[in-house]
Length: 316
Image (tube, rainbow, N blue to C red; front, side):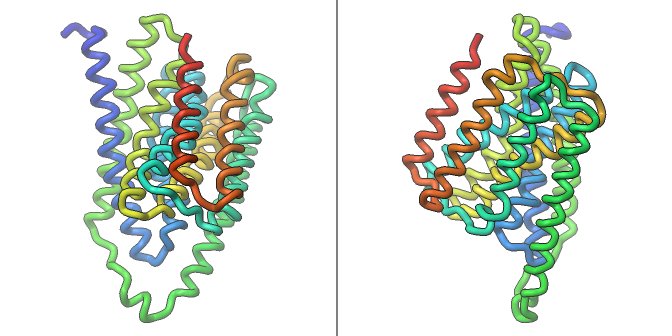
């Protein structure tokens, strides 16, 4: 195979997605077990540790894409990934098994998810997310982190001695899984960027389209894998918390960091279609959660079809 050949680019894409999946599985498993060993509740682990772990592909892809290709790659990957998290990840998970929504997640974490989406649209409406905007996003992330830490401390103080004795011990293999997962995520994101950017750019597609489609779906695979596995095992707290937390970190952490490193341009087309789509999906899932505190199979079908319509409308 010649360097730059379509077959080589396809192999890079497939290999990158496979490494992202494997890395996220290692990272999620190791981080989850370490967190449970210190007494974090399942819903808290989903919103924090698992969500941050499954956000790692978006962070690596967006940073590397912004530095080596264009900021359109990073912005497209984040907006597309957040929409995919709601429409595809929660939709498919709910089709497998209806998802109960934790009252704590809905009252304390969902408002931050809504705030993050509103901030992204508001700060990017002038066509640019710069250093000051990125600092605002990171400051909001700090506020979210402080709120979570207060909750964790409250949970820790409420653990009895008998409950603490029954907790699993932290294992060296869990730490090794975290390190191995991060390594695989770095390499996988590099392959995914190289393969998809070269292949689709050669076919005449724009960077923002590449970010919104291939990269967004590729980087959402860890969330999809973690949430589907959790749904199959009847652990809805992980599924819902994973998506809510991931959508918070994607915007506040990833776009915040990228904007501090280099200004992010926001094309008129993004403001006219992708931003409204993000707000619509966010409002839709909040309405579903508020109405019955549960995401039913019917809701899952509506979300999945809605994502399919969004993906179809992206086609040139």
